[in-house]
Image (cartoon, helix red, strand yellow):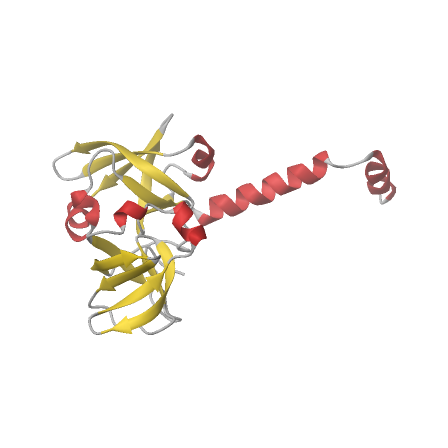
Length: 206
């Protein structure tokens, strides 16, 4: 589990054969869970000044691979007793978004991000969302995009200050929205499959 608060920007040393090598100040241990651009991965090798993680074919299918270059966001997994900040982040990328517009407001910057229609059910106005591992608040949900407002310190301390129109980002939607939708959909599917015998049985219980 993570909180969506970036602890460091690590630098990609190499990325080949599904092995990602990163130089970082963070002292990880073999087997530790660590989120790289919002993707939960495990440290498979430790070297002086950094660590390696391996990406499975399943992971590779669901993330923005071109962002595993230059600098990346790093967040180690929460430890028992840590202060809880941000929001509950699993490190599971649900979808990929595309930055469609950037507006500088002087003391903040608005980012508009497009996602597939199927994902809008999990993006709630004033709700939480994770963009490349960063816990953020959704301001507005529009017809084909949603809006985020990024404050200056976030622009400075994360890769948001380098993003441009057309860039793609990893997105993890709100966990609770996904769970609620799944439960409701499952119950609806069950009710549609009821036979007349099922209905008669239910009636006989009252």
